[in-house]
Structure formats: C-alpha cells, structure tokens
Length: 234
Image 1 (cartoon, rainbow, N blue to C red):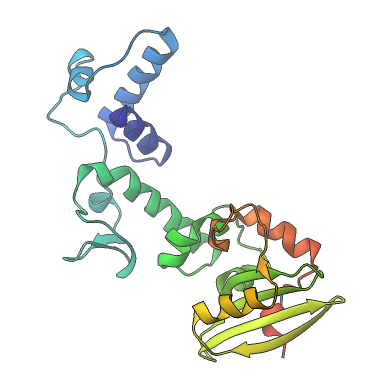
Image 2: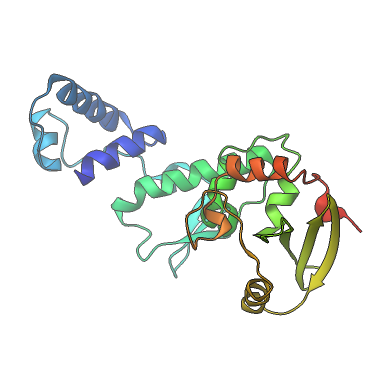
C-alpha cells in the first residue's frame, strides 16, 4: 500500500500534477466501489491509462525555489539546513519534501524562524500556532519543564546569550530566575536528585517535551499562569 499512501499524502500537500490528480480520482473511485484494488503502482497506472513513464507528482525541487539540498544530503530552505536524507533525490522522499515545504511556509507565515528544531524536532508546537500567538518567544526558547510532588514547577529555557539554561521556578505563584551553566545531562540529573520529574504534557512516558502538542503545553501555561513575557523577567 506504500504507493497509495504516497499519492494520498502528496494530494494533501498539494504536490500532484495532472497525472497525479487523475490517479487520486481513480483511487477514490476504487475505494468507494469496494473493488479489490491491490494493484502494483505500474498495474494501476496501466489499467487507467495513466502513462507509466510520466511522473504523477511534481518534484518540489523543480517548483519550489526556496528548497534545495547539498552534496551531503542536507535539505535546505533558503540555504539553511532543516532536515537530512541519505538520498535527497529518491522519489520516495517526495511526500516528505512536500511536508517540509508546507511546514517551512507555515513557519514563515506566523513569524517563526525556520530551522531543524522548528521544522522537525518541535514541529508539533508550531503546526497549530497562529501568527498573533503571544507565546512564540516562549516556545522558541522552551527546553524542559519539571514538576515536584510539593507542587513546585520549573520551566527551563535555552539561553544562548548566557551560554547556559535559565530556570524559572514557580512557588506560591511567584517566579524566580536562576542560571544553570553546566551541560544538559547534569541539569536533568540534578533535577531528578531534587525529586523533580518531567511534567506530563501528553508526550508519553520518558519522552521529551518536544513530543507534546501545542495545545497540551498551552493548557499547562494556563494552569500555571505562565506570563507570556516570562523569558524577559529580570
């Protein structure tokens, strides 16, 4: 079923040419009719007179000026690396490339920097974010969020200027900022030794906060009354 899913994903991402649009229409008719449609891709194209030698998907490299790749396999958006593929020209990557284009365009529309973090690792934070979201800077710097059994919570942001992490601790609805300049493993170890654990934002057990959704983190922000200018606190 791989080729069917590829066509469907390319259709969702707007990456089908005229042949592709014809193919998705025929695939829809087959599903709707209940017919056994276990064709190979070539068999399907031949059955419905879609020329097998012609592509059914526009290649994003050819139609999206901002998208490119380098000799090491890094996918570039306006010259900046956002992803890596072993073989960037592999046709099987076309749906993934269209998804990258979609994410990059959305990030630019809402005013969020386009990089590997926003496009790949923390993409779930930004796909539903709107341009006027007051917490954009907060999400861009958010690194971790810990909770203690006594109710104390600590938000950790990655602060490039101070070459370390900023820890914002809330207790009795007051926020205090401290700087942690050691490496990431030491931060997590020290937090565990003090009885803290990763806050549950629906990301799954032992999973990082980057796997949580935008909506889930926003619920935590509301619950803990996190100010939108938290990272600007002196």
